Amino acid sequence: TDAFATIVFEDSVVNSEVINNSLSPRFMPWTQRAFVFNIAHPSSQLFVGVSDFDSENRAISHDPIGRVAIDLANIKANTNYLLHYDLHQSTVVKRRQNQGKITIRIRIEWNSERDAILAVLKSPALDQQFINVEKSSDFLTAHHACHGRDNVDDFDLNILASYIQELQEYKNVQYYVDIKRIALHIILWRGHYPITIRDLLLRRKTILIPLHSIFLFVACTSVVENYNYLPSFFLFTIAWLFLAMVEFRKKHPSPWSTSKTYFDFFHSMITNNSAAQTIEVNENIREVEEYNQEISRKHEEREKDAIRMEKQRKAERKHLEELAMKGNSSLDTTRTINPLKPILFPAQQNLAVALVALRKIRAVLVWDKSYEAFWITTLCIGLGVVFLFVPWDFLIYWVLKIAIWTFLGPWMKLVDIFYFRKLENMPKKERYKGIRKNWKKRWNIRLKEATETRIENENAVKLQDFKKVIFGRYALRVPRFIDARHADRPLVSSSANPHKGDLKTNVIDKIQGQELHGDMIPIRESFQITREPQGGDFKTGNDLIKSEAFVATETAPKGYGTIEAAATEDSDY
Image 1: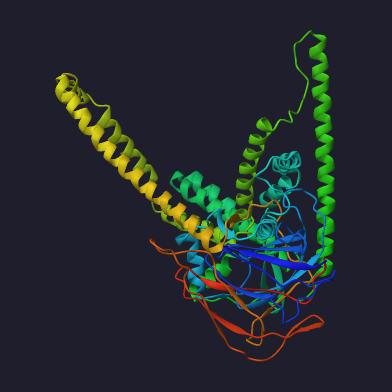
Image 2: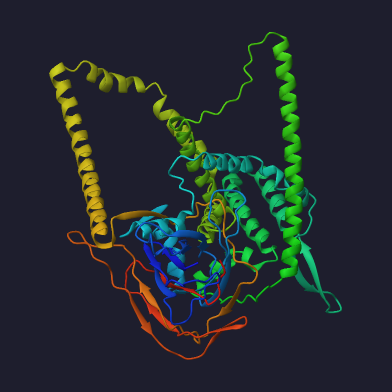
């Protein structure tokens, strides 16, 4: 293959150099392989697509090989990550075929970690944004990097079937989550949180504290004694659920399947810094393999149980239908699928909207989007503490009392006599005059809103036209939040080491985004890179990658940091 990589990040898109005639292309230090992007939001995704360069049809399209979506929410700053990923083409089907592997080096630098965390509150992540490219081939490769081979905007029976299958997985979540075991774990006060203490002989001992059972007991007894605590403990329960999910993910033996914890974010908010991460190559690989085998075995057993129960339900339904037919019932037992697009395509679109919403909720709940999860947990804890001191029974009592004595008392007769009857007995001329006055007032408000909306639409169209002229006429939707069915995880062969300033990169391209600022003539903000060669080599496994270190400085007002993404010397397709 003649492989090259396409990288899409927020409103930026760039292609690497083409490596000709190689099934295992190696991006050497002198090639165009390292890029620096400005970070506008800490929850953005980095999309990488690999394609086979077609020199004959390069004006039309290139052959896609595979793609990967890298979630940066759990990437720590001041750490050099060497990440290995499996490449896949589809983002929709349940069982994806492996199309090869890719190795990527990533490092994030924040201007201020505290500002990056606060950015989630100041500028919530948009569901999508658009980039423009000049050629149709660039559009197709960038589309493949962001969305895979499946075009969810067009009708496809395979996509519709995969949506139904995914929705069925959410429906049968009880078969994959052992709710009974979790309930017994809490009710029977089984310990789970390890604490190390010393006994009388000063020997270290580790005991397991049942924190979940303690919380549930305190919450229930407090609410029973005082119903004023009900709103607070409702919020505490939400925070408890998020913290329990962090604890659950920490139990995974693979460090690449864990996430930033609540205390990591809290430490960054206090100190405006975070500790670098160190992960060895193939760390806990034996435990990871055993864990994955156990999870696969449990899933297979639960899938068999679900299939068995479904067969039983079908048999019971068939038996009931036979009884109904014997009783001359007009029960219709036919099941048909209408292949017409006008009927099924709206259903496919509605399923897509519902599943994207479920995926986003799942991503936040399991801390894949750790920034949003941190703030939801913090707000629930903060509001819960405040509500502890609110006398809810007193407030509800007096609000209801005031409302009843104000609007249901006999003095409402006076309101009828001196106001409503007066309006009813008003001459038509005066009544129409008041109606016209109110109508004119509402019309002016609506006209003002319509004018503001028209100006916003005109500015959006003008900005879109400017982007078409400057960047290209093909516009591509780039999702910022996780909306794919699968979350791509680094392989256990990946590694992470603290950045010590000895990393050199010979070729660094500063990639400016397509965000334009200004009213009359929109322009780009400046983006500068200050190079600081510091010598040294960056050693990864058995390879030695020669590169040059750098310091990135961002002058755009909406940037919170920078990310370096570089293809390494070994990738297999």
